[in-house]
Amino acid sequence: MAKGKSTLFWELRQSIGQHRFTTSWDGEIISAMKGKKNPVYSSKEKQEARDLRIAGYGGCGKLTRPLLETLRVSFRERKKRESPMNAFMQANVKTLCTASRDALTKKIVLEYDFGGMQVSDGSLDTANVTATVDMDTNKVAFVQVDEVIPGGLARENDRVYACMFTAGAEDHKSMRSLRVDLRDRGEAGSTSALIPAGWNKAALFIYAYAVSADGKYSSPSTRLYPPPTAEELTLAEAVEAYEAAQLRLAVREVTATPEEREAIMRAKAGVKKATAAAEKEAVKAKKSAFEIKLAGLEAATRQLKIES
Image (cartoon, rainbow, N blue to C red; front, side, top):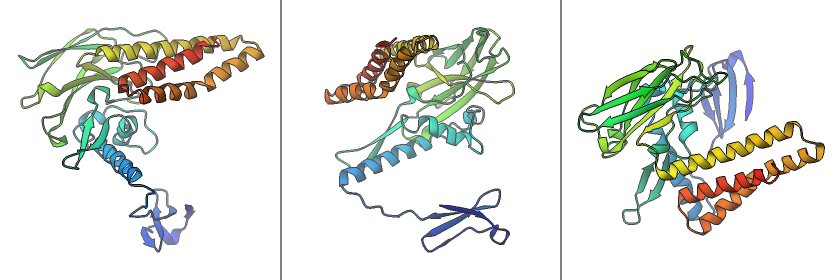
C-alpha cells in the first residue's frame, strides 16, 4: 500500500488495473492492491471455516440497527473517527454470533449469545442496578444504589441507562430494543418501564451501563435479566481468583529481588501457554464451552500462583 498527496488528484477515487485509489478526508491518496474476488483455498474445510466465520461476523453486524438507540449513547471511548457501531462490532464480533451449516438443508444457521452481549464498554465502573421483571403486568422495576467507590472510576453525576432487548421469535428483523434513562449514579431510587406490546418476552434481555456527565467515558454493560446462571457465577468466581492472583503478583513485584522478579516474569509469560494447553485438553475431552473456558481460567490462575 502506498500513500501520497497531490492537489491534482484531490478527488481521485477509481481503479487502475490491479490498483484501487481512494482519497482520505485530509487529501491523502491511498493506493492498494485489489483483493481477489474468488480466493483459492487449499481444502474445502478451510473454505467452509472461512464462510462460517464471515457469516458469524455478518450476524453480529445485523444487531447494530435494532440497537441503534442504545449505541448512540454507549461506547463513548472510541478511536478517532470510529463509529459506535464499529465499537460494538469490536466488542462482540468474536463471541456474539456463531454460524453452522444445517446437515439437512445445507443452509447456514446463526446462533446468538445474547447473555454475553456487550451493549457498552469503557473504563468507568459498572452501574449498580438490579431489575425485577413482572411478566403478568409487563412491568420492569429498576432499583439503583447510590454507591460510588472513592478513588474509583465513577462519579456521582454519571448517568445510568438500561437497554431492554428482545431477540424476536423469527430472525433479526423481529429484534427490538429500547433505551431506558435511569438516575444518576449517586442517586438511589427506583425507575419503572414497560415491556412494549408485541415483544417476545421469552427472549427478553436487559443490560445496564453508565456514561460520564461530559459524555467522554462509559462503562462496560452488565446483564440484569435473565439473572446469572450457576455456570456464569462459577466463571465470575474464576475470573475474580485470576485477577486476585495477578494483583498479588504485581504487589510482590514492587519489592522483589532481581531473581524473584525474573521468576515473576516467567510466570506471567507462561500464562498464555498454560491457558491454551488446558483449553486444548478440554476440547479433546469433548467438554462444554463452559468447561473449556473454566479450565483455561483455572490453569492461568495456577500459573500465576506458582511464583506468587
